[in-house]
Length: 187
Figure (cartoon, rainbow, N blue to C red):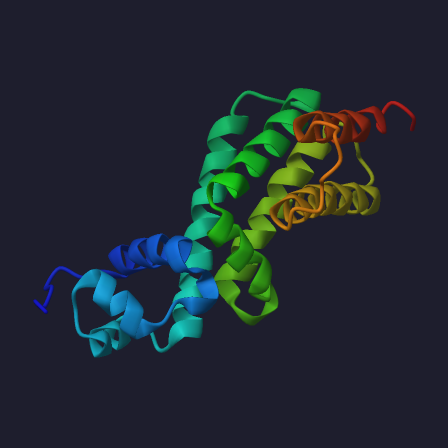
C-alpha cells in the first residue's frame, strides 16, 4: 500500500460514500475504507476519531450540499413555485444520494452542533418559502413540520419499497405537493 500524502477529509468522505453505496453504510469500516483508498487504516484516525465521527462528517457534507442545491434552485421563486421547487429538489437529491439520506436520517441532530445547524438551515429555508402564505409564527412552524414530514415520509417509504400499488409514484408525489399547496387556499 502506498501512503497518500494528499489525503484530506473531503477525499475520505467522498470515498466513504462511494464505498457505502457499494457495500452498505452498516458494512463501512476503517479497514475497508483504507483498502479503497489504498492506505493503512490507522491513517484515517488522523482525520476522524472513529466511525461515528466519520459518519457524522459524512452527514455534514451531505447537508451542506443539499442546502446549497436547495438555495440555488430557489433563487427567484416564491409561493407555490418555491414549494414545488423545494419539494422536487429535495426528493431528487435524496434519491440521487440514497446512502447519504439514510445516514442523515440515522444521525440525531441534537448530538452534533454542525448537523443541528444545517438541519435548522433547511427549516429556515422552508419557513422563508411558507412565509409567503403565513404570517403567524406558530402556524408557520406547524406547516413547516408538515412539509418536512410529508417529504421525509414519502422518501423513506419509497426507499423501503412500501409503495407497491399500481398507481404511479410520481403521480402520488405530485398529488401530495399539490394538496399541500391547496391547503393554503382553504385557510
